Length: 235
Length: 260
Image (cartoon, rainbow over all chains, first blue to last red; front, top):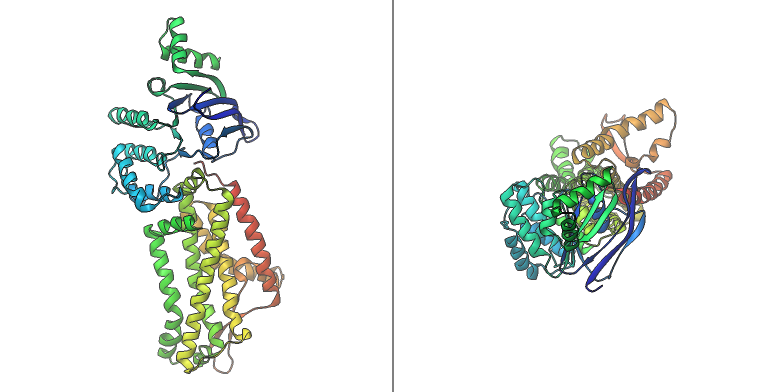
């Protein structure tokens, strides 16, 4: 298949010897595409993204991608120096990535403008919505090939959600973006591919068109179809 | 290491870390001068003049620089625990750093700070000695060794601070455990091992006891004399604690939960 940036093969993770967080998860990511990971709380979404970001190690399986590909990620609690401004925090990430401070500064200001965040705002004064905006901006520093976002719209008011959705759509240009959510509407609105998880098991990994087609065949809308798939897995 | 220094500089800007760092630096630069000139002269304790002249000035300066070292260790505890609390080590991992690289850079930072404190202490001791005697002396290793031992002591304290931060992780609790252990608990433990368990000289192997500051009452003058004592087993203790700290911090950095 063309444009494939990475392949995840048979990824498994068990915590405390018997709590299965992920079991044989396989999927792939293409350039210019968004993958939405959907599943209830505790389904393994964050664990999957944490393994992808290199924060925890899988027990089995692999993530295959070219060595020169870079990753930007915001997984779990949003990370920053609370006493620094939004720009200074992004600057820190830029320096870690080896970017020149002066050259990067203009780009970083643009990034913060893209997510609608004042670059002089101290991180310890961020509201919840601002934190999510900062998280998205932080993943885009250095224009990585793969972006990972863990529940980017959770706890955000409806107006901000629409703006953040727009930012996510724009962020996927020329890269692969993976985000997790337990909101089916959100996943259906944003994703090109949907990965369904439940209790660490992979329910499906489908192209959004295929999901809509399957829903049509069963005379359901896409949300009803996904909901049915997820409920069936819990039986 | 260059990238890690960016992290250290950013961490030092945090208000609490900055405050403790400034206090540490002020103590480090001025405490020996204060004791050598102001309080000693002021109280007319002429006996102490000897202790700030060559070669004993190295011993005396190293004793007082022990306390700023503990403060610098507090900065280490704060930086490392805050990095876990704020998820900054997570940013390192996401951006291609390995756990091992975070570990080596942390150790190197502790080593460099110990070298810096050693150089400052040596320079201050020379300066005070010169001001007291009007001559430059004490270049022999036997005289100078106290400052070298001070370097080991400081490195041990910083490694102990690093270990405490990695074990406790919460900044407030870690600072509490670190300070209470070094300033109080270890002294009580040493007394207990020595007098109750009769384990002399086992207490000398405790991590903060690489240098033991001994005190005794001079029968001729009735002054309390403080001096450093270094026995052969203390060098062994340094090496043992160095190995334990290296292996321990490596395991703790490897096993730490960065995904919060």
